[in-house]
Length: 134
Image (cartoon, rainbow, N blue to C red; front, side):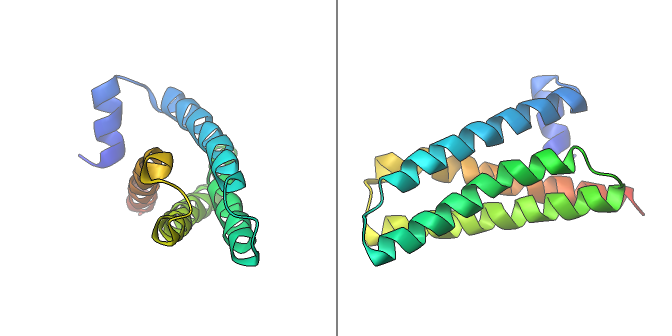
């Protein structure tokens, strides 16, 4: 059983409801990332990380929304791969914030946890979608 199937089983949720809840969750995550990135220093370096973190963190939800409205299975898989990539990039930028000590660990721990869950989910969805297309 893969991660998505385990989630369905654990929460007794049908796939359409899962997609709706994940869309909602990624939207709320985008808002949290925008608020978090606004706390970064107003220096040239801080502005670069602010922009990159905000772009990657908000792109997860935007691309997942597009995936759920895909025109084909191939389009769906492509959008899910973008979600996976943007989740990974968000982990990278949050790591930079942490290493630069621009925010306290407790200010970013929840976002780290959530984006790593997104990364695992989108990786699993992508693999399942690919396997089902064979």
